[in-house]
Length: 113
Length: 321
Image 1: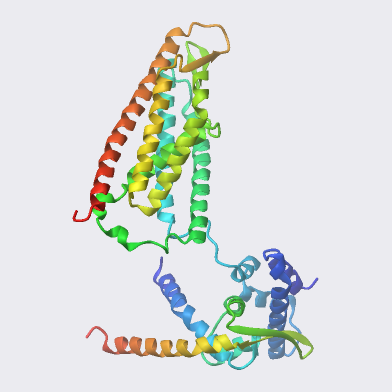
Image 2: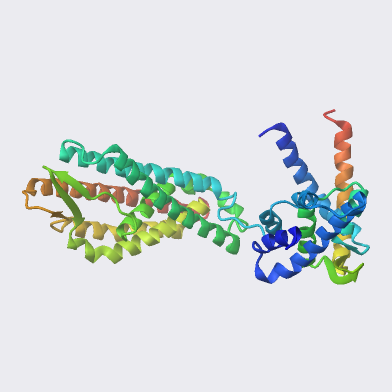
């Protein structure tokens, strides 16, 4: 396996959990798939379509999101929003992320010293 | 039909029916939105090539559909190393059986009864069949593992006194492979070479009717032994009950082997033309008898080993030991 492939694999693993948090946090406001992807991209989180849409389904199946079909600009769109259960999960997840981020930052700042 | 509709129809073919419509509606809406955005940037309608470029970003229809389905394994990463180990050993056993029979055949015929090409074809056929069965067994293990969560329910207390009660994995894999191959052959699912050329005449050997009376006892005992050894391979730890069960199965097969040893003849020969095959028959008969004596010795050794194992396991149960 080349260095680039190694990096891609590690990057994928690193992003996997973070993306869930980003999606849940962004869906505190209502979005349909396409607008959510664009908003996340504008905020620096690029998610490809093949990852985002199945993820939305999974989170909805877990009860963390709710969705409804609505007509908008003559097109039917599925709008997603975080559910009550999702909001309850988001808070400790956010804390966990901040702790993890802080810890990693400490390690990265200290290096091997 | 538009390119988008064709693409969605391809995706649909990989999706289960009950999920299909909902997923496709969302995909269509999202992809169409992407087309519109690109179209807005260019200030004109997209041509076919540009639509295809957009679809390429989404990927192969099977990949798109697969992302919506739950992750499934035929044989997952936990069992894969063991699967390869068993598969390699099974392959070695198959090659060894074929080579032995080939050498015997060549020795009897004097000039090589089977060409190397034919031998290779036979070995390959048997290998494929045995490999397919190994896959089935491991797929069932994977399935049962997911359902019963036996990997998650592992008990760390099995680490205590491990040195005295650990299952020898190589022994267990050898048992499983030999029992599995034997059961396949015994039940007629696996054909091993049974014809030889003797003094220019083709002779087909078969087990005598004496074996028929032990057909079900052998199936039951070896079937249970196979399940027990599979269980032990996964749990890698002897309990008093598994050791007793193993001892019991060895004891049960003992009279079966003794009964067969007491029968005469053990092998029947079928020949296409009249020929004197008496000495050949005697040699085959003697060969099978030696093989049975060898099996008997192995069973007796296993009985001795298992009795010692049970004794040690009993000592461990006694407080203070």
